[in-house]
Image (cartoon, rainbow, N blue to C red):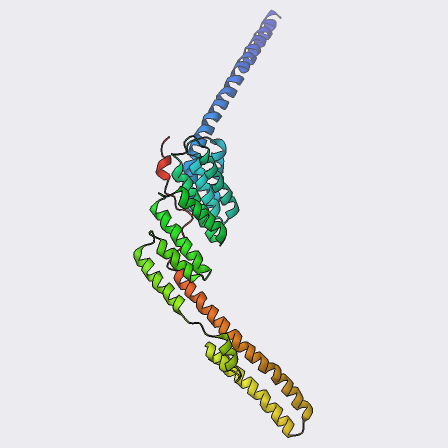
Length: 324
């Protein structure tokens, strides 16, 4: 009986010690877990930017957006965060999310403007303006493009030479795209950054285009008095031949019907021929207009090949963010 009681007391003491041990270990484990989680999170946040940049350079823009957004969220005031915002904006642009890219680039410029390290980040601000310009160029927003370009010229006189070359090229390209040959030539003459060989070739093409005499739509309509001749003048001989044959066919049918006293059919064929004749004159005028436009668009496309658009991943400010 006494032995049984002693064993029960021993078990009770053991259970008490075990419970006490568990009470001590549990908060220790929780503390260690929280400490490890904090260290892991800090290490992860520190590595987010490098991994996001790696994904961006690999062209995996969707994944880089996630990593860069996470880095910016965890490090809003870290010295490399403005650079991360720039890269994130370029990732958006490569995904053709131009609205998000423009908003972020504007945020970069605003944060630089109010930063105590404004002088240090001046190149970053200019580069952000350049990429804003590049996106506006892709969207063919000419007025906004001109405003932003004026801002760059005023605030960034010492912009990187490669960015300046692209800026001048975009200005010339936009004028060429709008078929404004004279303005394109003026922009080309003002540029000092476009390579001389490219500028010389482009100037020759522009002068050739400006000196080209377009065909006259009025003359095309006048020549269409003889069906098909206006089309031939426009440079569409097969269309001219078809117009001549169709009109000649209905004139012949009308004459045959009237000659054989089939007046009803003759008037029908004559009415159809009247419509076709008017359409032939209109077609001659329209053919000249279309061929003139086609020639100009062809010239535009050939010249634009000489001025490729800037890539959406060009970054020239990396070295400024390598160290605090």
